[in-house]
Image (tube, rainbow, N blue to C red; front, side, top):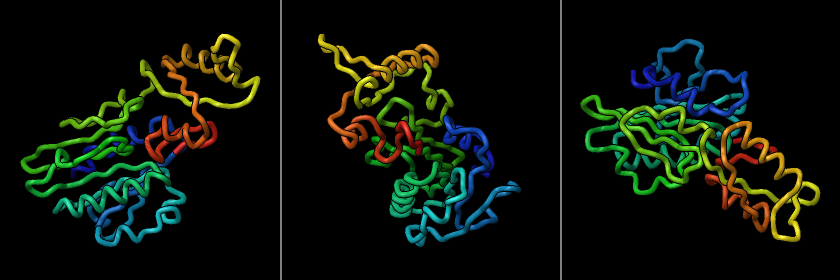
Length: 224
């Protein structure tokens, strides 16, 4: 019932910023009987076969994905994490896991740039969450469900890479950056309530390295 408990909140969290019109997230689990909500697309697959799944074609018509499994060892958890990193390039997702005794999210050695939410049901009714945060390179680990404010851009300082040609992007004689894109960004700052830290990259590839969470990135023409 752990997935039932947090389904709506998790979906709202991972779909923040998405345009309207999306449907409920699909559910990937070892059994389609583990989830009780009607109208939810469910896919069943054993955890040891999950790496063979063609993610692009399997979820081509999906809005988002909830991956729900029972984790019996750190090896099986590693399998889920690898799947999450591969799947996030194609679809928004969250991992929702039931963990055996002696396993918890604190055992993850490195979560820097982790772009997807993880919700864990531990022994004795304890819960843990790893929450990606807009504007932060490292997610937050906590014992309560992630706050929606974590994925809001309001009151945040956001790193934004800009490059281009005049009149969109101009270096003035005194070294100040100007141009239509810069002036539009200042309008957006005031309108939407965030602060832009403008990064001038050496190339488009360099801009991704300096701004994005690996493949989880917003650009002017694509949102993942």
